[in-house]
Image (tube, rainbow, N blue to C red; front, side):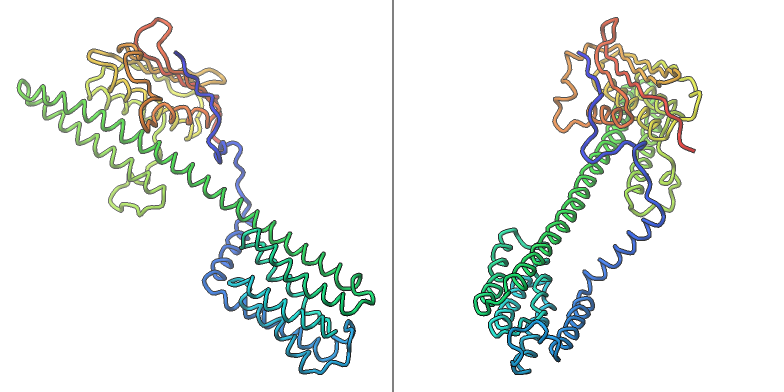
Length: 416
């Protein structure tokens, strides 16, 4: 049965050709905004104090006489106007931590403002805690907020009937609705960014698991083959046993170097003593060394690896290397005694084709790759092929017997 690897990319994964690098200006703006957000999260009091102080000064300036321009009763005592003004603005300092409580306190002050006839413009600042409720609280909190905001407006409209609905109630309601919609929009954008981060994290974990599987699985299979061969050779040929031990040591060091390189890419501390940590990922030039390691493990491998006529993208070369590595690892594990393998590369003007064939028993006698619990082999090869718009076919060769893995990738030169 043939399995084709033309599968959809994992969620959140974008082909390299489709990725666009951000400009230097946008990166600078993003870094600056990130620093501002980090500072505000660690030290919220400067911004909270500045906002509260600014609106307090503006409200007190209005309380010195400007409030009479919109008041229904301009004869109110100054102490009542000032006290109500402060009750409307000072709670803003806690608007981010306790937005519902702040809105409740401001609504009480707004009720005094409208029932008394002052109609202080500072009451419109209720839009600020309403924004934070829409941003941080469950949607049902907006229902309670609506009741808190509407009560002073309705009370003022009932108490003073001349033009109050058209002048105060309707504009205020529209402003509060707009503040809630802005909060909901910002919350949605924030949730989208968090979802993108979660998807990117999941994709990165999948990539790491695939790389770890390829590195550890292959090298352990080679080490197992070398150890078995060395055990049989120990009694008859101590020299061959020593060679097997040397090969085990070399393979182990190569596996450690690859793992360190992978961890270095993930941001872990570099090993100052190992230059391999900073080496590039394996590519077509490393295929002969891969085949030599498999041969030392006891598998006869025939190869036809012509040089590439053009330079290939590093990611595509890594895909070819990992597919060949996984196919040979499966041959070591499942092909049985006396099996042989062949690895060929073919280049056409538009396609690179890698074919790995073994002469082992039919795969119908072995557990299918996709049924193995937690298997990353076949799924990893398919994802690698799909990432570069390639296809992966797995199944018996046309002549019958054994197993064949064939990878086809479209040819694309590396960007200069």
